[in-house]
Length: 319
Image (cartoon, rainbow, N blue to C red; front, side, top):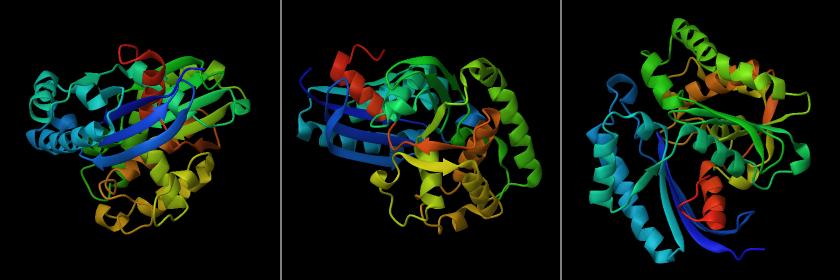
């Protein structure tokens, strides 16, 4: 068995920037030395303008600079900063990446949606029971959503990424707070249209024995809200069941609330109060599309998948 390596991974997402420093092999994470996440809303305004705003870059640079110092203190063997949907879509991507390098001293590697899906699959199934396979992993992000189906925790069959996420959906479709019934119905139709082709391809793999697994901030927040968690604890989230009925009840509760009022509910992290409705709507739609009554929630995902890949193959790999 390979020796554990100390690796640091920064996931620069559409809604948040997340850091983890860990000792890991290619098969497991031996220990987490440090982890943190900040909502910077890098994708703010992207749906309307097609570019990442200066203010969003400023917020992200500040966090990346802070994390760079934290990473140095752990002296990891390998370091990787990865960018996802917002950076894939932005017309000014090269300018944003140049600012990251110039002002924060970090080089961010933008990965494809397909690679994001594959790495998310590997991370999301960490520490879950392989006997529950095959698996369907659902990752609802800020700017994109990934659906991956596979036989085991390390081997997937099909991976898809659709550029629909909670930030872009909220900014692109909801003009009212709370959204009107017409806006919600329009979004339901839009989601059906965007995911139709992917679900058609996935359908032959969705046997009666498939275990759906949900990952990323929207899914974990929804579980925390359903369980009324005053303080988020990943140990109380990972591997827990979340039924479609629970999500429907939560959606019914929050659909008529203003964003600022949702922030008062247990389980809602500041910065998610305006996008959690979109998260619940996407999750409900996907469960309907794939005809599943619920899913298992994973506290892990892309970040952990990259940790495992780095520990096993080095920074030049990423699948």
